[in-house]
Length: 379
Image (cartoon, rainbow, N blue to C red):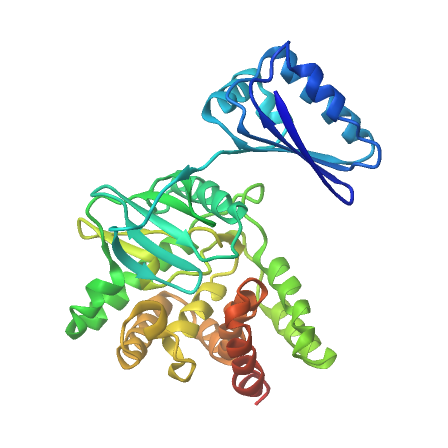
């Protein structure tokens, strides 16, 4: 076995090449000098096999790190090694990430593009949601797990069963049997905006009627509070405090929030909608999703509808108006009025969130928040 060691501060990364068994385990043991190390990363990308002796070596290292509050992570784990980890219960003791399958998008049918990535059809039965450069593999893994949890909860979502790589980009593969993008359906049938708005409202209501497991899904208010604090490069302390007060005024809830629920993240299969892009699935109040929809369709000055969905902005406004009618039909006038008072604040939240992980849109969205949305909130 050959081991390539790289240390950065208190993190040690070991790339393993060859089998990890009774013969080669002593090689790993010699490399595991953990003085001053709090985080150990073992790269199994070129390790096709691990024996019980190798597992014991991992366990000894994990126990040593645990004493000092450190961590251990196995990455690029091959299917064969992952099977051993699962069978022996080690996958419950030491976190691991599978080695992802490499794909090429050359010649693939382009389906759609959004702020965070693009969708391509791999074959008749599957599509891949490919994240843009700079978005890490952990985001794809999280989306896959959230999609599985949503499916089990009864949300109409496609089965997500694989994380893949395309060069330096990562993606999630979804089963999509002959599905069509909802945005495409709308663009080809603009005369029936009301019907499409009714469908969109029904999808949103289904999500918002579903209980969110607090062990799986994060609290969206807590996350958004952290993102607002990161706006100190643009906003004054008083403006940040104002946004935090607005955030606290939104009621708490333990139901699902998609937080990217628009027509380019919905596919139509056999006449029925199927939701994709589950990476931002959270626990919280439905108003966060309604605010997201307002960001895309309800404020044409933001010029986001056509960019995100290819639906003309004017048609997007009509879709938004009819969506509000259908979505709030069974809610009280007070709930609708509360949304109207907080509309521009709720619309700003997706932009604030996006700024934190997409530097390419930082300047544009920061200017929109500072010069357009914030004054509207303070009127």
